[in-house]
Image (tube, rainbow, N blue to C red; front, top):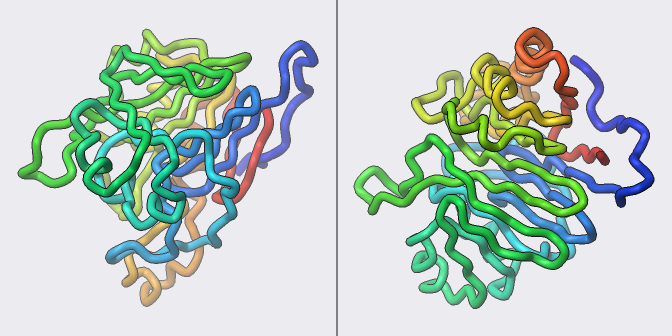
Length: 261
């Protein structure tokens, strides 16, 4: 599998930006001195899942948290509580009440196409093809991705399937693309390595970093020989991307690794 955190020469006209892959859909994006944490899942065990790799420190608290949708592995209330109730939360439209009831003081709701400034960058909500409800009987709340725009731009896809509208998001400096999950099968609304590579053909970022892989697995895997995070999804994604989108640099980060761009 290609090495991950090595970075190419930086453009001296723009300040260095970085991505820390914390694991699953959790990343720490740093652009123009602004720190944005995505879908924080910061526990070693969550329900029937256990973390296969060590947790990494994301302190100090970020300038904002971007929450793509309300599924339990993307909105983990204990992880959010550890960040403090003063942290700014950017959430899908109509999802704010979940957090205000828990006394979070700075909650911004966005619909696709809406933006909010966070320090020197702008965060824009963009569509995602995914069922974003907290539970199957919950109120319909759309899932989102986000584009962070400053001296560099980053697309965080959250959870999504392939959709033609991705072409409207083309040309970011970096794209954080989900490629797997926590079990052997993916349901609708997700990208596997091959479909994630197809998405790159529409997104055409300068750099692609696969996420949502290699972090959590069901507890019973401990008794089935799966003691370590598998590399197969990332390797399969890199191989498929080389065929489908050869002009896009794919940089593999294992959970806990950081890269600059």
